[in-house]
Amino acid sequence: MIPDELKRMTPMKGKERLGAHRDSEYLGAEDIDPDVEPVVTIKDLYYGVVTLQRGKEAKDVIAFVEEKVPGINQVRPMIANATNRKILKKLYHKVDAETLCGKRIQLYVDHNVRDPSTGDKTDGIRIRAIIPKAVPQEPVHKCEMCGNALTPAGGMGVTKLAEYTKEKYGRVLCGACAKKEAVRIKHEQEAQQAEQAEQTENTAENATEE
Ligand SMILES: [Zn+2]
Image (cartoon, rainbow, N blue to C red; front, side):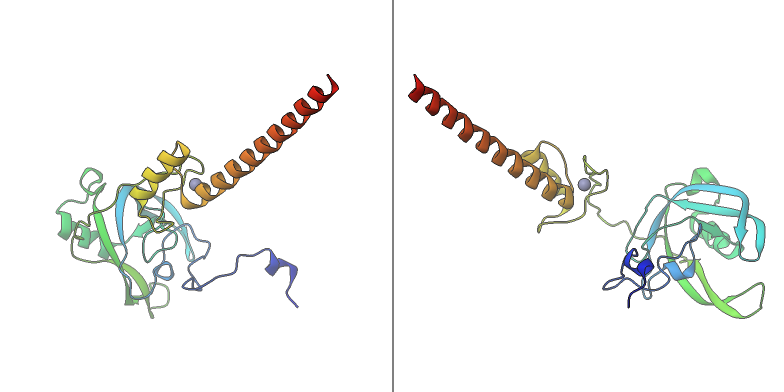
C-alpha cells in the first residue's frame, strides 16, 4: 500500500537522483551530478553568519546567476572556503566583488576533503583552476505567460521557439504554455462556431416566422 504522503510527493524519474533535492540553503557536493563539472556565473559575493550542521559561523558566500545548469538541479549559493578563495585568486588575480561578479567558474567534487569536525575524508566542492571556455550560448528567452526561460521544445531550439510562438500567438511562449494557448484558442474557436451556428439557426427560425 502506498502511504498518503507519498501520493502527494513528486516521483523521481530517469536521471533524477537521491540527494539532488535536499533541503539546504547552500550548495553541497551532493548537489553535483557525478562526472559533471558544472559551469556557473558569479552574481554576488556575501559575508555573514551562516547556519551549518556544526553551528553558526561567519563565512564568505558566493551567489550565482543561474538557477539550473547541466550537472546541478538547483543552483544554491556556495560557501567559499580558503581553498576555493585561493583558486579564485589564482584565476582572476583579485578576489574583490568588482573583479569576481560576472565571472564564470567550473565546479567539481573533490572526494579527498578533510571534514573539519571528524578529520575523515569527505566530499567537497572545489573550483577548477581553469577559466571555463566561453560557450556560444543562445540568448535567454523568457516565456511571457509563466516567466520561465524557454527550453527547446517541439524540435525547435529556444530562439526558433521564441520566433515561432511570437508569430503564432503574438507573444513569446515556452513549449508548455504554447500547448495550453493552442488548446485555449481551439476551445474559443469551437465556442464561437457553436454561437454562430446557433445565431444562424435563430435567424432561420425568425425568417420562417415572418
Ligand atoms: Zn511558459
